[in-house]
Length: 139
Image (cartoon, rainbow, N blue to C red; front, side, top):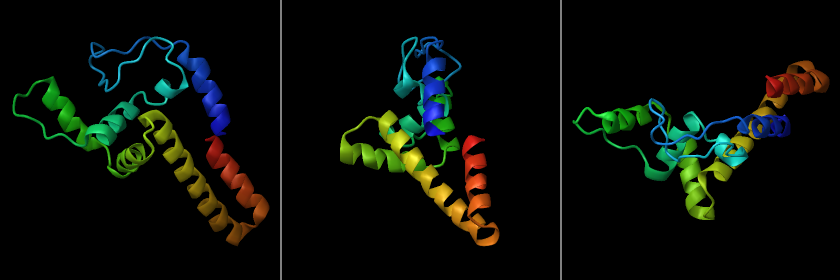
């Protein structure tokens, strides 16, 4: 399913406009050109916030009340485990946020599917467990 998702994202990325810091009201950590490709499109939307937290941590909002304070405060809407894992792997491997985030996401998703399979298998057997994993993966 991850390969199907990757193929769809590469097709869709061809139609994305350039995202710059002037793209208000959207938060942009890393500006991207039009047709940015797979590695940039997987960091869109919430990925921009996770990249900021992984790279720079949580910022304390200043009292100016401007857009910078707004963006600093919004980072606290995102839980820290995923960006902390990504930041740690970025520091250890030297890779950028996009490939590290993809690796962490894939590993966590695979682990969750193994647990799901084992839980369902105990009560319903291999076939139902495999179907359950396939359905969750496709949803």
